[in-house]
Length: 341
Image (cartoon, rainbow, N blue to C red):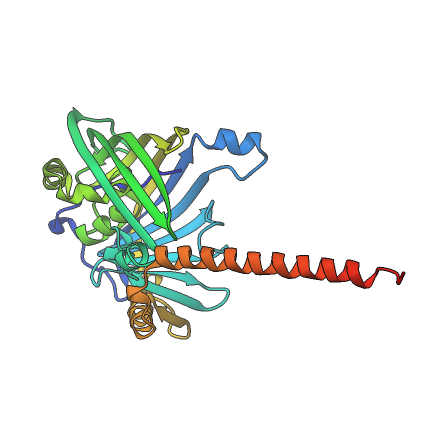
């Protein structure tokens, strides 16, 4: 499934409600559900049905995402685990209460191509892996007032994007052409949550097609979209996506993401903090250490293609030597087994 996320609409800061009591703040709680048409294939093959349900609590610039179902394939997302998105310091964390551990990452990276705050550029453009994208296109239409969802007015927006991606790994190249259309119902007001929290949420979960083509960052139409709908939140998104690989194989998927069961109330500040006795790993520091280690070992300038070719040549030479040795052994064995005349 190549569905990604989408630019949001966020709440004006004036809507933020001040904390009404020590340790508590006015906020909202809602359920976020994701369904995929890939479920049909999963059922037919007896596999896991692509469905995810999350309980989200938001107050001020903070959000807490508790995965109720469908997060089994995500690192550290065990039953009872949760994610913290903190708009004020632009970080997020994955927390595992059963092991009392947490991983913190760059929130800006999570919502963009930087992936987990470790530096996506380092991960996808180095001597081993190179990722490039071209022909990225983006357009959108404002279709006017949309449905009321949970009693909240929305704007109905249709977005279309396409592009071609190329991934080179150890000398092998894979190409994919992707195209998708998203129908979005975006709320321009959501009382109880400030802009930073909603932007972090939408960057992480609400942006449908934009992640498919990071090159859209330079698109004038994408910039227009951000200006028009950069401070709001998609309450419902339906994405129709098609991808074609270099062999002409086509995959299609329809995904529906929707916010349900929204209610307001006071939320304790401790919900958005990592407990003091938990062991915390900062992946931003890990990424910096990885860079240093690669440079120290000369891996930052390593030519992976040359390494692969040299390895293939060496293997061929070794194979030839082995064949010669086996032939000699065979001849000697035959000679030694001969009976004296």
